[in-house]
Amino acid sequence: MHNAQSWHFRYFQGSRTFHLSADPERAIPHSDPDNRALHLGRGAALLNLRVAVVHGGCVR
Image (cartoon, rainbow, N blue to C red; front, side):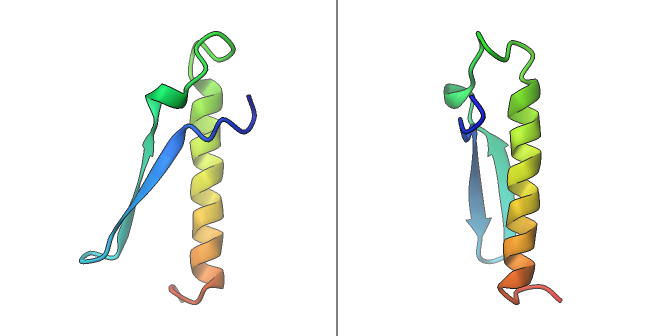
């Protein structure tokens, strides 16, 4: 359950932006009926993306 990775990223090169979306097909409705873990996982994924972007030198 803790590594369901129920999100996906899209990168838009023209605007140099990422979009983070939930992937409802990978949600676990029996274990997480309120999607709380899905939202927490997306937040963690977003934080990791921000750290990677800064570490990669893309943002100052």
